[in-house]
Image (cartoon, rainbow, N blue to C red; front, side):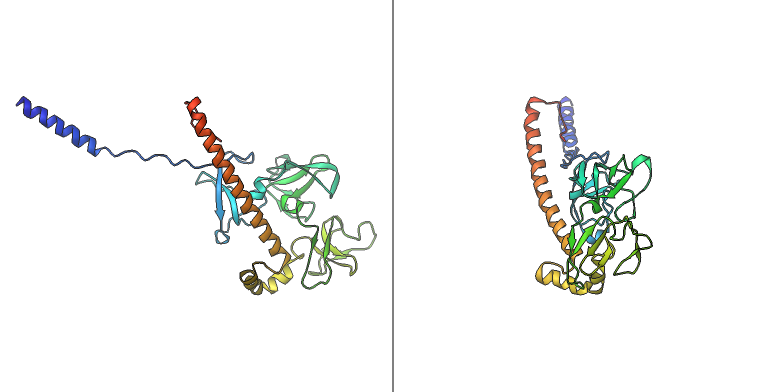
Length: 270
């Protein structure tokens, strides 16, 4: 009976050991921190069909980007917005440098961009002395653009040519709407031809030839409108920068693993 009892105990022990399912190892996702957000961010490949917006510039998100590692948190950043300088000296506001804020100034929910007169609720370049604000997207727009329907390049101005002239206003050559004298615009001095800085600068020909541009992108690798060319260039720059960042993160992770030999209590490395 004693021998049978011992055999039964061994059988039960083996069966118990076999029934134990090993725990899955936690997935170690490489992540980075950004001062604009409380949670870590990871590299993310955004697609146009996702219809996702960047939490920094509030523009459509495509290409290499970052997203919050929390599944319930809808926080995304372009790679270019992730790398924005904390301070910039801008030609439109030469008296003071502009400081990058990750939310509207003075605890407000929105601000008004002094370049395009549109609201913003994300990042802004701000001057507290003058209460001057720029969308981060406006702060780095090109100084010249080309239009298919105009023979000369258009130059970026930080006010209309009519500023300071009494009883004189400037009308956009595309939409025929008045452009306020303190707003930015694209202008051809030779022809006295000017457009709003965003909506009319490159979109008229883009809308009328949208299908044709898509074919050009497939066949020639580039779009015909300035807006599409800028977008393609930014996407390529973001992808290259993201690849470099991924390599740096991987290198940091390897160094952190080596540090574990000397610091056994250290579990995470940012």
